Length: 116
Length: 223
Image 1 (tube, rainbow over the protein chains, first blue to last red):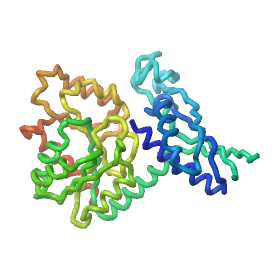
Image 2: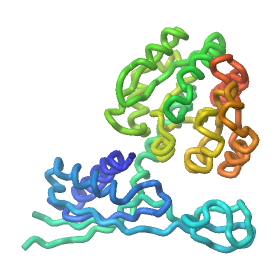
Image 3: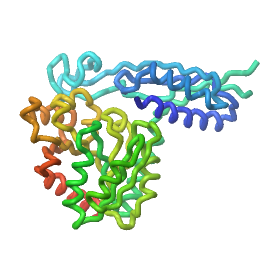
Image 4: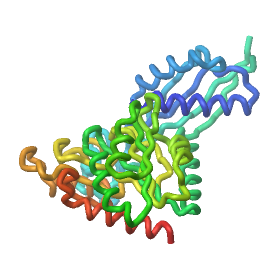
């Protein structure tokens, strides 16, 4: 249950960006969340909805989540495969000599702001 | 009507913490203080392992401990009473992990000029602490036998970031069908470089190996 801690990081970061852009209010935050990032999207949005009530700059701010599928690369047979289905072991050749290409992201993609 | 403007950010939320952690490591290197981040599940025997380890080290190097928990100070008191070293309690206020900034605040409360080795006992949890770099020189974790030898498969991130995995409570191995060889294989599947040290904190078996590893690490850090 680290989603709440992550929400506090996001709030700090988006407020900083909004201030740098002289925006008064943030109406939407778009996140990129990797499938194997260990962040649970519905818990993140639950924590978000609770936390933004305490932030004047963020009242009513919605969080939108775009999921990035987990993809692993096999160094032995040079093929890619879905990480969620097959984990660390390559389904094509059985090798464990693999690494995650993407799907580990916990990233703020963009925010929507208004001046007033 | 307010005009809505979209600002592209594309920034990992861990980016700031990673910068803080790198800065903290640099400062610790200058001060000659080695910081170990010790993680585990609740009940794996972290505090007992620490007491055994510290008692083997305290005549050779100066050790201090930061105990992080959501609440209470039982662990910090226990360590102080059993070893006599400086031990402080950090409260995370409900948070499930420590980040670099919280670690720095903890270190500010230790007398660093009198410390060679600072051990951070992270919150008992195999998920969240793995995500946040604390600024430590090395990560270690304790896996206890009753938790099962398949833990590395279930918590891959934790095992992939640990430099050392201490396997505790090996005295009860026969009662739990714990396969040490399999466990080591699973750990190395996640992290081929991880050092595996089987111990029993209760009897002290194997603790010398862990203590020696720490001693070598602290010496190398100070060079």
